[in-house]
Image 1 (cartoon, rainbow, N blue to C red):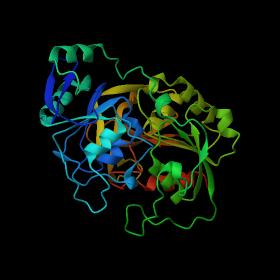
Image 2: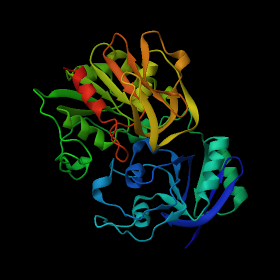
Image 3: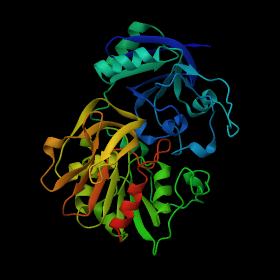
Image 4: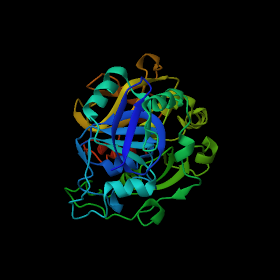
Length: 380
């Protein structure tokens, strides 16, 4: 196999074998602790501008298929694994991970000590890096990593939001091949019978497709608007509720998104996740900060402070809401049990709430799917 190298801005260089596409890319180097779900992770728009390292030693062993995508294309800049499986053993596989990356133009590296890389990121924090199968000179790669732009301060939402509004249905081909609703005991609970359907506008900052499926499963008709839409454009659709999606990058630079959310608070029931959670907090007057190495994986413990129950959650974020800046009319509803950071908030007077993690999973545990039902009840 051809050689490849990953250089960090602190001067560390890891050499391994190239797989996927050939090329040279830069991005924030981060890690994900999930053991499965690599295809959903690869197609999650929240990873835009990042080079992701998987901590599980072997990746690609069950191949790829059309049913596991979460957006229209692979989103991240580069992919780092300890061992890339060259064979796909699962009956549902439609191809190998290496071919999948190559077709999508994503540069990968395998055969490096991912434990050493993750340990460095945990100690030093997430860093800008350069991954290349073309340039192998360590000094040049380090120089490029030091010169590459940081994730902080970049508006990556504009790169992943849709161009136009669209109504979502399971049969809409542009949202991927339709999937049947799982029966009781499947990946999602069988949808209950709702007395009426609700009109939801989803502001798409890089939304995963399974979010729309979950909203539909709790009796919502979903219209997706680009994240740049204004509050007047949203309200003109006369929605029963507004959903704020996940998305990539630094929330502090998204002034146009914050302005829209600010114009909606108190006027319509609202629920946000991930970036949408951060935008709601900013709209209410709070601030965000960058985590040292972020929360990325399917095993993050979160306590729902309203019930005292602990959920195992799927997460992917590098920023968090600063609790010291929360205004008096916003309360904390969920908390991360690893580091104590805020995982959920609720406005005390306006009908608005959000969580930092991913209740739609895809992939990940389904402990938090109840939150879509709570949103439905907010619109009752």
